[in-house]
Length: 117
Image (cartoon, rainbow, N blue to C red):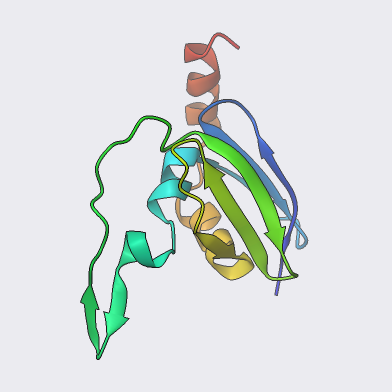
């Protein structure tokens, strides 16, 4: 199982990663938040039925990452500036997000240009 050797916020909207197998990718923080695996965001499974999925409504600060905290040897817990902090991303899940939502160099350059950098 590969794990990230570096997770770094590039700017207010992009998170970059370097992995133990040499894979590198950058994603939008909004894509990381969208993938939040907590029961509130995904719903809880009770007797084979998914119930109580949280409302996906925009909240100020919801896509602003406050911190990423390692959890054992298997993942990280994200804390967002809207006080949501119950999602723990396993390395496997995090890798999937970085693979599926990888930003192109062109998109990264456009984001940097728009942000004045």
